Image 1: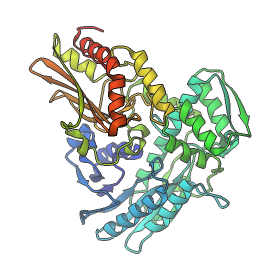
Image 2: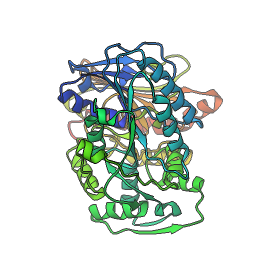
Image 3: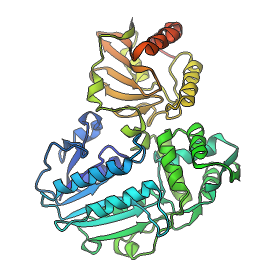
Image 4: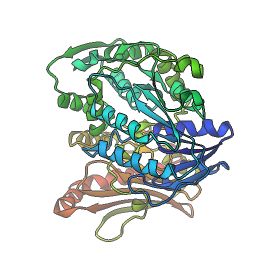
Length: 473
């Protein structure tokens, strides 16, 4: 059947596409920027892409659509009114999809309760109401904490457990929730396709256990073979809690605020007949964590929340940053003849994360700490895969704009806090490596910043390019 996917480059979107393709479906995927489409998706015969922004749609959707997945969320956006953004996207999507032959829209939402809702869950519930239509049927799955390699909740808990032997934590660690494995979420989404028993209905989906966030931390530690001591304090306000998450974990501050807002509300699913209809037996939280680490050990993380555009600083689309500026910029340009081109490219594609930056890693770490202190993303994001890069990937405090091994070019854009914009480019031409750092300052403060860090650039960038061309480092 013909299936429309929104949120194509998001955490769930990247994971559901290979499954649907394997089952023989023809997919139409909407993206805001085609440059972010993973290379492995571009070569698929039954997969086409439409560049469209549902905040301001300027294109129509194909008419022959059977089912549409609505996977658009704005949880970590920098906007203070992400609810209105989600409403606008939902309204525009509905107007476009009603012009097609779509029979069913499947929406992944969040579990809601009867007493109180966070702003995040209020927004999702509002979208659920907007999507209802006389032109097609809707099926809504409401999930709580989704556990899987690369998910926001998994990575945040991982940061806390693996970095802090003793935790003095906020009181919301006693809040109850029902985590669910990402593989179970995907099973629900797949089995809902044109299932008439699910038309115009909403279902809570959740794992078999009710756990507090503290119990989740403890069980995570048990899976990792770690002993952790956790104490809670009633005095930490939501804002202080957000700062606590932000400084200890790899999350952005905007996402930390949204998470804390949600974590203070108990999220327990309502029972229904959904597991009988689709024949799903959700696995436990511990099993979900164990399976996630199998994926991590195999370096087969399909998607990560850190790859979302809203986790960074972009105000425009990636294409607007791919051409390096020439005027009004400061530049550090170096080139070296290579001894082993293949080895050099391999090292370039492995840069950052656990590998580091090939020279003076402690200075990069200091810069990451300072960035975190001033509200930036810091170095903790790491990278999705140790040797693979795709456009849109997070790479420490950089974002991958272009990663083309065939053309031998890697282009990064800085997402650290800066009084300006910065790019770092690696390009191989005729057995010579060119390394360019470009900084476009904003006002006099930007110019002062460049001259302040200029002495460090002299040996950091020189050391980096020298080690990249070496046969072994």
